[in-house]
Length: 308
Image (cartoon, rainbow, N blue to C red; front, side, top):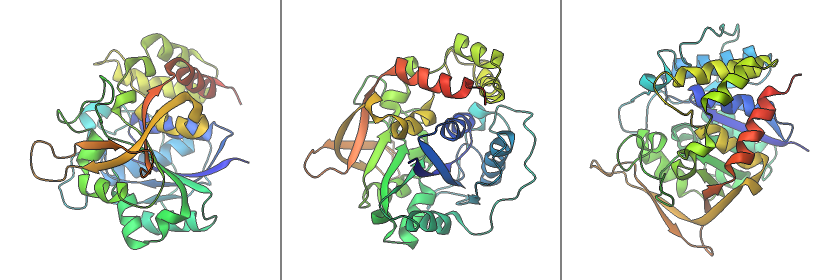
């Protein structure tokens, strides 16, 4: 039976590929998408989620908009990396749908409550929506089977340094107060951080992207076009968010360290830094410290290039 998941996203090019990967994977049933301000403003990330779904012919998954800004700090986007529409200045048409009226926090609670202990949230943006949902519904964490997070830089590998500051990864830096509250919640958490996602061997190279663009699958073609935008300034397209989805598809691809996580929240140079303390007995957070890069990339390419 497929695993029911909710995707909490801020599309974003790699978020778009994460959505595509999830929808193309028979192991998962995407029940819900919630959007948060992150790579772009909330209105933009919500529009992009709807655009990707519509392009894929999936117009029956509810999309709920969430937080417009972090809990305490001002909002800062990442349009310099993702393009002025946060999707590589893509020509993907708009969806005729509007987002659902109820807020993301309510939708996440209803999603988990429908099958307590069986459902997973995959959060690939700032953790504001998840934090607000946990605050509004204190029993939500114990209703989840697992929370998967893309975020952090734990210095467990040579790649585990910040990409927003020297110490902080973007998603956590955007709202460290939200992240700290989420990481202390009583829910099993799996984390894909820059320790593995910044490794170039897990990303797509130019040959991979050309294969996608030349494929028969329209989904692969879109993925290739979105990724091609990155290569104007970068030599590899890092698959941060698809890696998070992959932990639910094939956990055996990953090696995890188990322990506890704390986030630096003060107004100083270390703001947003993630600190990991390994503790096999009491830890409820599993941080990926190694991934089978070749098998992961093959999984992504196969799923996107499959003709349906």
